[in-house]
Length: 100
Image: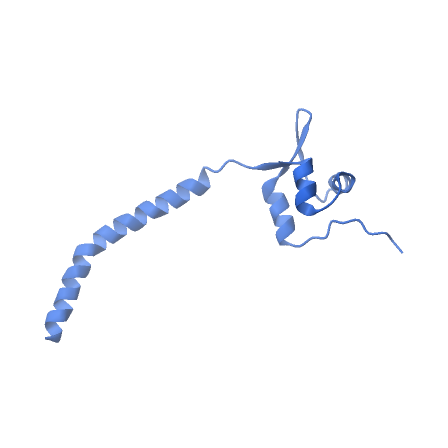
C-alpha cells in the first residue's frame, strides 16, 4: 500500500513539475520586467519639503550644503526619489536647530 502511494506521488510530481517550473519562470520574468523598466521618479521642491516636514528655505540650505542633490531641468528643480527615500530610511534629521 505504501509503495502505491509513493509511486502515485512520483507520477504526480513528474507530471506537474514542468508546469510549475514554467509558471514560476513567467512570474519571475514579469517581476523583473516590471522593476527593470521603471522610469526614475523625481519630486519637486514642495513635495520634498512636505515629505521631509521642512520648509523651503531649509530645503534650499540642505541643497546648498550638499546634503541633498538636485537636478535642474530648465527652470525646475527636481530631486531624485531614491535619494529622498534613502534619506528617510536612514532617519536623517533635516530640521534646523538653533545653536546654544
